[in-house]
Length: 292
Image (cartoon, rainbow, N blue to C red; front, side, top):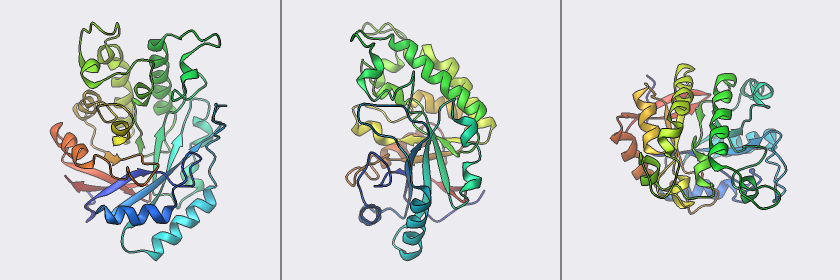
């Protein structure tokens, strides 16, 4: 096991290279240092074939300019280690197209694989949950379709290190899914027993991730976006650990300076509480381990 002296790190950050962010990389490095971080990894968005959306965002990435900029900054600063990563939005239709991305860009240290689309739209948009006449789609069917797509992705896509915010879709569903409701076997508020309903497919997803030598992340971004738990829900994180999962990164998913490193002490405590002894970073697509 390759151990490193990094003591505090954020391995999911966005900068002005992401279509939904305007934060300069230089400001991110400075703020990370002020917050006591010894390493960061920029993971700007690239979602091939991202569908049309109300904001007109395409999530393209000027990859060569991006890599060159981060390398220059990494070489010129010794206050924070700067790693070059990517949040690769993947759909079943793009798995085969993206499976050699890291070989085509060997300067990358780290790739997060994420699912941002279900039924042809990002669930972030209310329109994803409605028909054109304004009536609501069946949310449970969309939740299941989302996880079925993830299962296909992990079975057919290998060019990544960790799967990001696996239960991202619960952040934006038509009904808020707080932590206690997620874990209840019976609920007077919802017909769906969330963990009971999806635990079998989540089991297959996590088992496949582990068998392929991949990992998952604790993503604290949900805490400042309306949920009362981090992605994934602690029950999913516990399942991952029980199945033998070891690779675990932490990322804030920050798109601004305020949320860099948000909730990291809580995230580390959560990891310890379900049995993790190490957290992971990546250099040149290979894991490095850090005692919690």
